[in-house]
Each structure stands twice: as C-alpha cells, then as structure tokens.
Length: 336
Image (cartoon, rainbow, N blue to C red):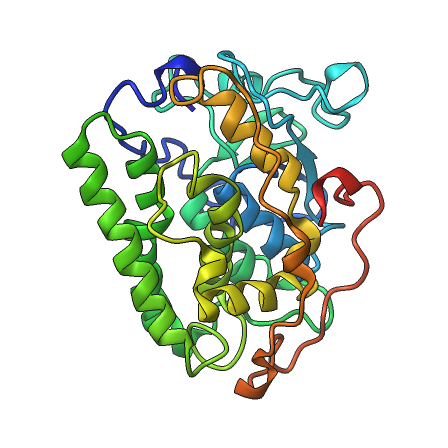
C-alpha cells in the first residue's frame, strides 16, 4: 500500500521490492526454521499476491502447521487492519494493525505494509513479506509438514520453464494491470495496457492445446496466473481500464480460469466481495466516490468449462485437498 490511499492514480506506479526477505527454511539458515504452529500467515482475500499463498497453503495441506489471519479488505492509511475479528484484534497475534508486527521487527522500514506477511507468533515480529518467495518456500521447504497426497506444485524438473513463464506473466500481466491502473499519463497507460493484452493473447495461444501452463499438472505458474485472471473482469477491466476485451470474451482463457476456479483449493479461497470492495473503495485516487459496481454476474464461474478433453491430472500423483478449514470459509456474499 502507499502512505495515503488518495495517492493511487496520482503518482507514477512502482512496485516496492520486499524489504523483509528472510526465508523460513527446513534448515533454518536465516534463523527461521520451519516449525509447526510457530508462524502466522497474514493475508487479505482482496490481494492477488496474498491469494497465491492462500491457495498454496490449502493445496499443500498446511492449515494445521501455518495458521492464517485474514485482514479487512478496506485498509486505512495506517495499515491492513483486523476489524473482521472480535474486538478488532487478530486472535493469535493480539494486534489491531499489521504494521505492529512490522514495527516489532524494524522501525522506519521502507516500502510500506504489505500482504502476504508471515509473522513469528512467539515474538510478534514480522519474518517476511517477500510475496515472490513465500509460495516457493511453502512448496519446497515445508515438505515435512505437507499433507499426505500434497501435489508437487514446483517440480524440480520443470522449474526453469515455470520460472520463465512466471517471469513474463509477472512483468506484463500480474504487475502490468497495476501499471495500467495507476498510470498518471496517457502514454504510460497505453504502454502498460498493450503489455497486458499482448501477454493475455500469448497465454490464450499457449493454453489452447494444453490444460495447464507447464506440464500436465497444476504448478506455481497456474496459481500466479489464476489470481490475476479471477480479478480481471470484476476489477481490472473497469477500475484499471484494461478494457480491450473481457476475460469472458476469450473462450480459451475463460474456460481455463473456470477450470481452476472449480478445482478444490482455488475457487473456495476467492472472495469476490472482498476483491471488489478493496479496489473500488481503497483506491480513492482512481474512484473518489467509492461506489462499488454491482456487476459482473458471477454465475458463469460455475458453468462447465469443457477442458477435461485436454487431459492432464490436476494434482499429479497426489489428491485434492479436503474441505475448507472451519472458520476459513468464504462467506456467501463473496461467492457466485
């Protein structure tokens, strides 16, 4: 987030690098060893970067090992806040605002307060806000705590290809929609919007004959693409002016997105209400009225996708995750 929500759309957009890049690893080389129950993942269901971690945690079955705190989608200029919890405090960390965990780690830190964030529960200190690395470590460093049947979402033999695909998707699409939406000039906006749709067209061609982005199972690449696609029509098309066409108007990408949405671990983590209210009510520099549109109609997310004929095995040799953990269900208001 920025220091002032009204600044969105009024100054040139540049994504901050994650200032706290410590890693939680099996050998604890950064001083943070993997340990069941020690850490808390703080997320917002509105945030695509945080949603990656939510999906990974669920697919890998880390719910018992890594607890999760859910922030209000409407953060204020102080920080992400825990107003969804009783008394407005996170029940595990006991804090009202996420910046309290940041301040416990370091005062005067650059880059603002972002999610996902992993906090050390005993000390209340932030460990990492490195959104690019968190999910990779959940997949590779937390394996001792994975559920039985957890899929390999970052298989070693495919990592070079996965990394290459993710790099282009991040630059042009994941981050590109923000460059378009927060642009302060016509040329800046047009260049970013062109990058967004060029990458979408590339993805549509790639996915026309294959069910998943890399290999024949779901990988980290699919998770990172999904969290942008699921937000495209509800917020990026209108709010961020990425409106050459809607996701629902591309038969390949629309079917691919629905396929993932209907896969356990994906759609059951998505809260469309949080997504829409966050973008339209927080970005007051772009949408000063704070009015949240009624559309689009979400019913289509549950319609048949027809991509089974492309083959592939969603979880590889693994199994689907079980039911959503009690207390972590998406409210009816956020579902189709």
